[in-house]
Image (cartoon, rainbow, N blue to C red; front, top):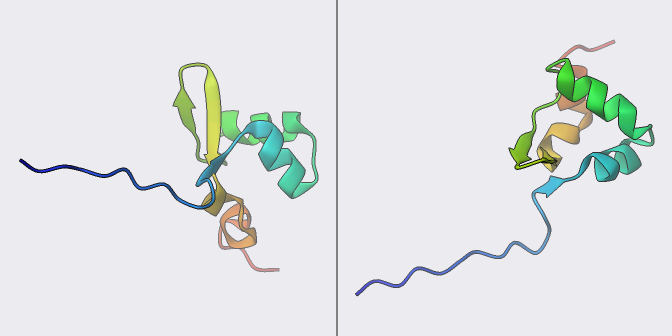
Length: 67
């Protein structure tokens, strides 16, 4: 019989809207608007919205646009 083990990362891979707003130093409504506009990937767990931390990098948020 094979047993599976759960991988427990040392840091979470996702954050909440409030957590994302704190990381980006903006209002949570800004994060919500970005989600609803399709600008920010997210996962829904029932009513909770979680945002992958890798989506909160400068490159990901800029959409590859360099100024």
